[in-house]
Length: 97
Image 1 (cartoon, rainbow, N blue to C red):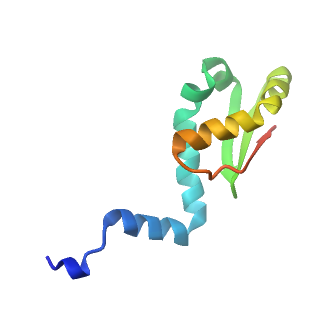
Image 2: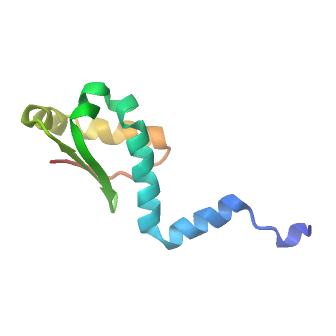
Protein backbone atom coordinates (compact mmCIF):
# COMPACT_ATOMS: atom_id res chain seq x y z
CA UNK A 1 0.00 0.00 0.00
CA UNK A 2 1.31 3.43 -0.87
CA UNK A 3 1.67 5.52 2.31
CA UNK A 4 1.18 8.70 0.32
CA UNK A 5 -2.47 7.81 -0.30
CA UNK A 6 -3.35 6.39 3.12
CA UNK A 7 -6.15 7.88 5.13
CA UNK A 8 -6.44 6.81 8.74
CA UNK A 9 -9.77 5.38 9.82
CA UNK A 10 -9.90 7.70 12.84
CA UNK A 11 -9.46 10.69 10.51
CA UNK A 12 -12.23 9.43 8.24
CA UNK A 13 -14.57 8.97 11.22
CA UNK A 14 -13.73 12.42 12.60
CA UNK A 15 -14.34 14.02 9.20
CA UNK A 16 -17.68 12.22 8.94
CA UNK A 17 -18.75 13.29 12.44
CA UNK A 18 -17.69 16.88 11.79
CA UNK A 19 -19.71 16.89 8.56
CA UNK A 20 -22.81 15.59 10.36
CA UNK A 21 -22.79 17.16 13.87
CA UNK A 22 -26.17 15.68 14.82
CA UNK A 23 -24.59 12.23 14.56
CA UNK A 24 -21.71 13.39 16.72
CA UNK A 25 -24.24 14.51 19.37
CA UNK A 26 -25.95 11.10 19.19
CA UNK A 27 -22.63 9.30 19.70
CA UNK A 28 -21.88 11.49 22.73
CA UNK A 29 -25.43 11.08 24.03
CA UNK A 30 -25.12 7.29 23.91
CA UNK A 31 -21.76 7.45 25.68
CA UNK A 32 -23.30 9.61 28.43
CA UNK A 33 -26.16 7.13 28.83
CA UNK A 34 -23.64 4.29 29.17
CA UNK A 35 -21.76 6.20 31.90
CA UNK A 36 -24.77 7.72 33.68
CA UNK A 37 -25.17 5.21 36.54
CA UNK A 38 -21.41 5.02 37.12
CA UNK A 39 -21.09 8.82 37.31
CA UNK A 40 -24.33 9.71 39.11
CA UNK A 41 -25.10 6.63 41.18
CA UNK A 42 -27.88 4.08 41.13
CA UNK A 43 -30.52 6.20 42.89
CA UNK A 44 -30.25 9.11 40.45
CA UNK A 45 -30.04 6.70 37.53
CA UNK A 46 -33.23 4.94 38.66
CA UNK A 47 -35.11 8.26 38.78
CA UNK A 48 -33.81 9.48 35.41
CA UNK A 49 -36.49 9.17 32.75
CA UNK A 50 -34.59 10.64 29.81
CA UNK A 51 -31.18 11.99 28.84
CA UNK A 52 -30.57 13.72 25.56
CA UNK A 53 -27.99 16.06 24.07
CA UNK A 54 -28.88 18.88 21.69
CA UNK A 55 -26.35 21.45 20.45
CA UNK A 56 -24.15 21.07 23.52
CA UNK A 57 -27.04 21.18 26.01
CA UNK A 58 -27.58 18.05 28.11
CA UNK A 59 -31.24 17.64 29.07
CA UNK A 60 -31.95 15.47 32.10
CA UNK A 61 -35.53 14.46 32.88
CA UNK A 62 -36.22 13.02 36.33
CA UNK A 63 -39.41 11.78 37.95
CA UNK A 64 -38.88 13.39 41.35
CA UNK A 65 -39.35 17.07 42.20
CA UNK A 66 -36.92 16.90 45.11
CA UNK A 67 -34.26 15.24 42.95
CA UNK A 68 -34.88 17.83 40.23
CA UNK A 69 -34.16 20.57 42.78
CA UNK A 70 -31.06 18.79 44.07
CA UNK A 71 -29.68 18.27 40.57
CA UNK A 72 -30.36 21.88 39.60
CA UNK A 73 -27.86 22.95 42.27
CA UNK A 74 -25.26 20.54 40.86
CA UNK A 75 -25.54 21.40 37.13
CA UNK A 76 -22.00 22.76 36.84
CA UNK A 77 -20.56 19.72 38.63
CA UNK A 78 -22.56 17.36 36.39
CA UNK A 79 -21.31 19.19 33.28
CA UNK A 80 -17.68 19.11 34.40
CA UNK A 81 -17.83 15.46 35.49
CA UNK A 82 -19.29 14.26 32.20
CA UNK A 83 -16.99 16.44 30.08
CA UNK A 84 -14.00 15.10 31.98
CA UNK A 85 -15.15 11.50 31.56
CA UNK A 86 -15.84 11.74 27.82
CA UNK A 87 -12.64 13.70 27.22
CA UNK A 88 -13.88 16.96 25.77
CA UNK A 89 -15.96 20.03 26.56
CA UNK A 90 -18.90 19.22 24.32
CA UNK A 91 -21.47 19.84 27.06
CA UNK A 92 -21.85 23.58 27.51
CA UNK A 93 -25.00 23.56 29.63
CA UNK A 94 -27.15 21.19 31.69
CA UNK A 95 -30.91 21.59 31.97
CA UNK A 96 -32.98 19.63 34.46
CA UNK A 97 -36.62 18.86 33.67
